[in-house]
Image 1 (cartoon, rainbow, N blue to C red):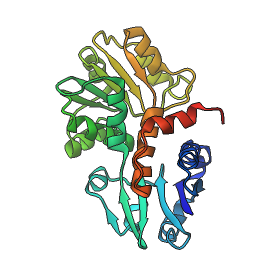
Image 2 (cartoon, one colour; image 1 turned 45 degrees about the vertical axis):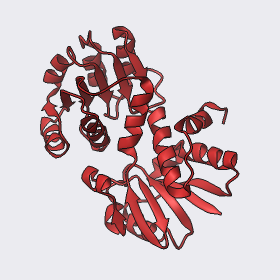
Image 3 (cartoon, rainbow, N blue to C red; image 1 turned 30 degrees about the vertical axis):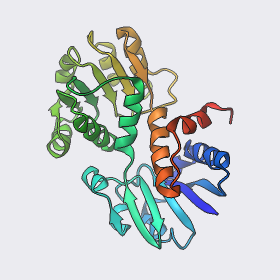
Image 4 (cartoon, rainbow, N blue to C red; image 1 turned 180 degrees about the vertical axis):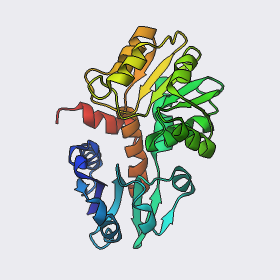
Length: 272
């Protein structure tokens, strides 16, 4: 019996990951389950160290624990160390092995849109943890120029110094969108209710060359990034394809079974 799950704070109770993984487990006829695992910040270390004892084969890690789990692992992949975050833990012979599927998950979702990144200008909005994986992926794909915009320019500067790209403040970023072919939102806001200021910024952009907009968030009915894409005649992709791609990569790590991300995504499209 394979025991899997996703650990986070209380917000993890609303995660779509159990729905995806349990559907694929059932489809493949694999005995197992995937559950939401709310863990308080002060209990992260004890919980991670008890994974093998509790019979887990693997867990995903979501906010706010992606960095907090790292000191308690026996091994961390080079990519996860570079990003400073782990989102996948595999339990193998009692050892806890950390990795990160955010970067390849984003690259897979981008590829599915049909947008070719090499040599094309890209703007990443936001410079937090999620942005690190996106910037890393775009740098590996050789998007150029690669701009990173943040309301705190020093945060963007720190990210670019570590992973590549050119930091911009929001005024500079507005100018850069005149040239950008790709825009990716990694900030937590996608609706005017979440951030009236960012919504107004997006509405004022003159991005005539924009071809693809991606938002790593999902489930927003009034999404101003989608409105921007429609206004500019660009393609739009929200975060569910990236979530499904990450899920497929984690699943393969734990089970040795390669399942297309589309099958994880289909589990979300079926009635719950």
